[in-house]
Image (cartoon, rainbow, N blue to C red):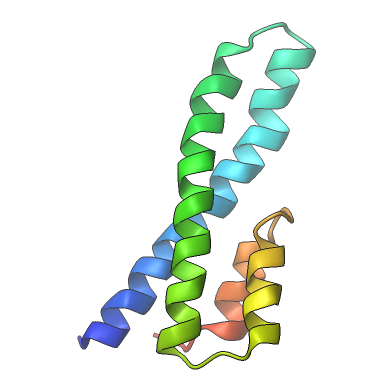
Length: 98
């Protein structure tokens, strides 16, 4: 496995974890907080998601440089980070098949 393959695999993992953490935050932790008054899950999942979000943005820029993406592609990757299921689309559309 080359360094480029390894960096793409790392970004793929971060992307997947960021997307899952966002979905857990939206569809599990937030309802627990606002419907059942259990805010502790938002704190834990929110912190993990925040860290993964930052890593995703850094990784997106890293892929921009490694894969010679256009600025438009980088913008789409960054925009997808705030959309549920967005990082899954990025993985399939913009990353080379492993």
